[in-house]
Amino acid sequence: MVGKKKIVACGQEYVLLDMLADDLVFRAKVVYLILSKDTEEALELLSQRYNVVKPKLKVGMPKRYSKNPACYVGKNRMIHVSCREILGNPHVILHEFYHHLRNVTDAQGGIEKYADKFAANYLQAYRKITSET
Ligand SMILES: [Zn+2]
Image (spheres, rainbow, N blue to C red):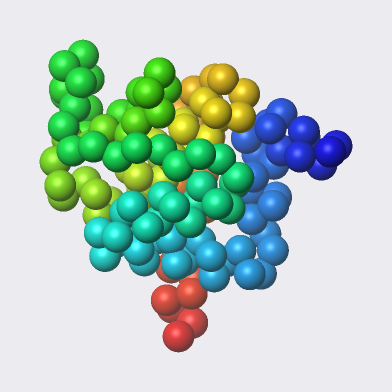
C-alpha cells in the first residue's frame, strides 16, 4: 500500500495523519489515560492505532540508562521508566512510544526531535479538547 509506505518513510507524516478531527479526540483520550496512569491501556490504543505490536512497560531502568527518566530498548521492545510517577507523564510515555513505533516500522529508533514533536502533538490535542469543554 503506497500510503502506508509513505507514513513509514518519514516521521512528519504522522503529524499530517493526525490532523483528522476524530484523531484529535483519540489523541486527547490517550493523554487522559496516561494522566490517569492507565498507561497500559493508552499503549494498547496507540498500538492498535498505528498497527504495531504493543510495547512492554516496566518500572526500573537498565543500568546504562539509569540517569534518564525513561528509555526504550528496541531489542526487547520495552519502555522502561525510572519510577511509577513517570507512568503518568504523557510527554515521556509518548516520546518513548515514538521510539517503539520507529523501531518496529523501520528498525530505527527515530530522532529525538521527532519523538518530542510526536508527544507535543498529543498534548496539544488534549489541551485543545479540555479547553473547549
Ligand atoms: Zn528519546
